[in-house]
Image (cartoon, rainbow, N blue to C red; front, side):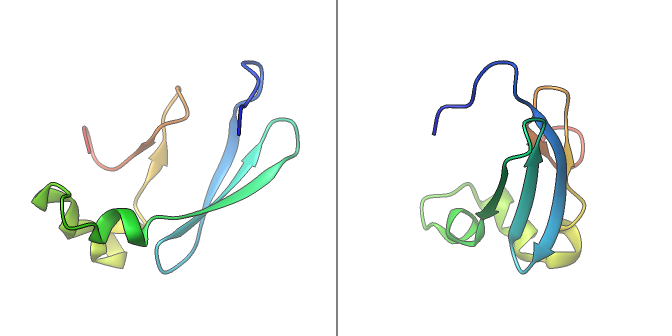
Length: 73
């Protein structure tokens, strides 16, 4: 999917398990399930801590529309 440069993430919401729902400034909505990403065998071991749903739910969307946890994750 190509997102036009004038469309940004307006809101990101925890849905359940490892799913996050996104609402964009053009009204489009989408859902992302990160379980496969977090459990991929070649992933950096530091990512495994986000399998703890309590930590996973503490994400934010930064100004560039990146999902972030903590300062650098």
